[in-house]
Image 1 (cartoon, rainbow, N blue to C red):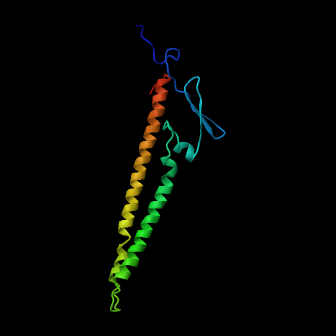
Image 2 (image 1 turned 60 degrees about the horizontal axis):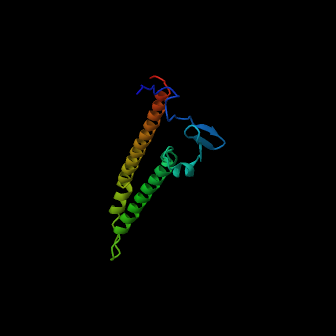
Image 3 (image 1 turned 30 degrees about the vertical axis):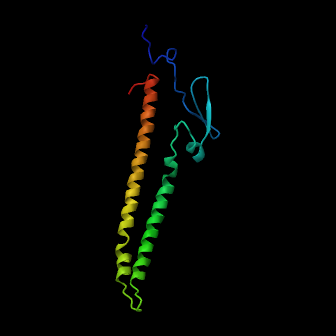
Length: 145
C-alpha cells in the first residue's frame, strides 16, 4: 500500500466545502452534492445534521422569560405575605408582607444570576465548538497554527 498525503485534494475522499451565503440560504455539502438550507430560527431548529446552533438565537428570550418569572415570583410573595397577615377575626399583621417586600427580591435575583451564568456557559461551549471546527477545517486544508 502506498502512503497517501491527507492534505492533497486528489487523495482525500471527503473535503469540506466552505459555506457560501447568498439570498437567505447557505450552501453546504460535499463535492458534487449541494445542500441548501434556509437560514433563520426554523432552519436552524430543523437542521437534522446539527451544523447550526439554535441556542444563540433564543438565549435572549430565555433570559427575559427568567426575569419575568422572577418578578412574578417576588410579586406573588408580597401578595401572599400581606394575605397571610389577615386573619379571620379582622386583625391585620403586615410583617409577613413587609418582609416579602424588603427581602423577597433576594431569591429571584439569585435565580436570575444562576440562569445568566448557565446561559453564558452554554454560549461559551457553542463558541468553543465553532472555533474548534474552524481550526480543524483550516488544518485539514493544509494550514498551520
